Length: 285
Image (cartoon, rainbow, N blue to C red; front, side, top):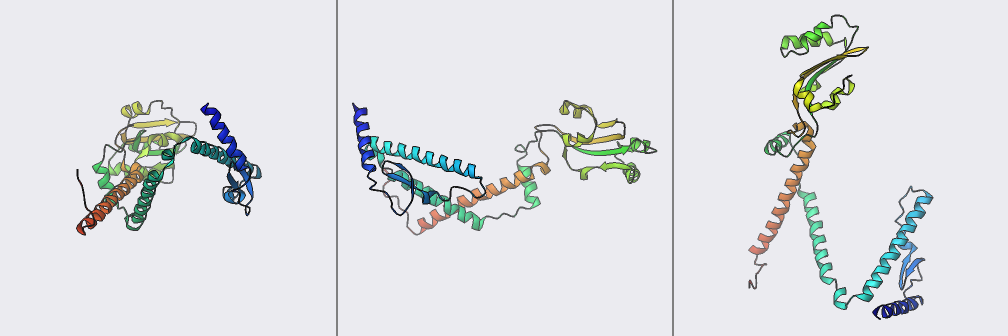
């Protein structure tokens, strides 16, 4: 019985809506749900520039379809809810309050947030949170040499590339200058192991195990010799070198500053009002 009454009421509203009592004659209607109209002028900005004609038509149709369904649900909800259930004034006030506070906090941050981050601050943050920063693939500090097999006296490389003595390092550097296709220590900075071995004709299925068991690599193909001295390494899930997480640290520092600014803002506003007797707890019971 209730369903029949509902549909009769819905039909009556539909008939009344057809009389176009709420239609704005100054605009061009493109869709209607009962007494609610969607006008061409209201959706002029939904089509971005640069879309093809077909994409524009599809977006236009999709928008209208969504609008019709939403209005139909809205009208149905209005018919079926009690008056007190349709009262959303409290929710709207809470939403307004949240929105205004959020906008003011954003404005306050834009005006007061210090975005300058020094290398010392990055280093201090890194040292204070070592457990947070992990690498997800092996990394190394290494020396890499790629040299033609036809180069004479290749044993100079073989003898010195594993050495840490300054004299041997200098001899190796002097020899490689002008003879090696590539001679790189990557500024003694960390690099991902996978990037290091991209150019080397070697297959490594388990990088973790390989690094544990091998400090040096010497391989060759038909054209080149490849020499690698792995001076240090970190395995997956170890603490990440600071170079790899610098951007992440900067984000963390800025987030901490934002949180502190927000806390200070709230506390200052509260304390100022309290000092001026503008806050009273009238009944604690």
